[in-house]
Image (tube, rainbow, N blue to C red):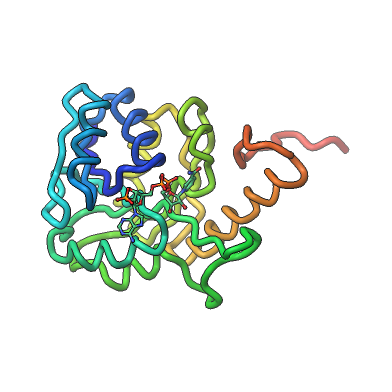
Amino acid sequence: MNNISIIGTGNMARTIAARAIAGGNTVEVMGRDRSKAADLAKALGDGATTGDWGTAPAGDIVIVALLYEGVVPAVTHYGDALAGKILVDISNPFNSTFDGLAHREETSIAQKVADVAPAGATVVKAFNTVFRHVLEKGRPDVFLAGDSAQAKGSVEAFIESLGMRPLDVGGLKMAHWLEGAGVITVGLANHGVGNLDFALSITEISELPV
Ligand SMILES: NC(=O)c1ccc[n+]([C@@H]2O[C@H](COP(=O)([O-])OP(=O)(O)OC[C@H]3O[C@@H](n4cnc5c(N)ncnc54)[C@H](OP(=O)(O)O)[C@@H]3O)[C@@H](O)[C@H]2O)c1
């Protein structure tokens, strides 16, 4: 069992929280609008609690489930309240036409979070390549990136508790490419696949035909 805090009260917050509870984890919800957080905690039931925006989260793993523009400002606002926590950035910084990233440099929201996170906090990028409704019902592969093997191990255990397969893509600088994979996912939905009912996944080929 993991203690999870979720910063955000939107669709991804609700979906990850519901799966987390179903997986036997405890969940705390924090939102800039406390009444929305309280409503979500009440709807989740099963002991879900509400925390105050900007105060120390109860969970060891803190999932920041905000629109990308709000992620770095929120982590900055929380400041030392996040010391020692594992911060999971799930955001997709899409450009206005959803066919590229909002930032031009080879960076990521996760790396920007690491720049403002307090001492002892570690950052992991995860969940951004999975559509919300797939996360709600499916068992997709969940790609993650981060510099701390220990933090990634904790997030992997959490993902496994959701009945999903975590797949580590490397250090935090790989978050840039995970954000790119988010763009690929939308491109596939709009073109080759033509719908949202899929997730990027890995198939291991044990025997290739000669
Ligand atoms: N939906 C998906 O399929 C999906 C899949 C993978 C990743 N993601 C990523 O997950 C994150 C959340 O997506 P979502 O679908 O849950 O969005 P959503 O339903 O629109 O919820 C957005 C949340 O962000 C908060 N927020 C927005 N701007 C903010 C700001 N400037 N400061 C603080 N809080 C702010 C909102 O709070 P208020 O209600 O107070 O406005 C709300 O709690 C996004 O970064 C998205 O890219 C989404």
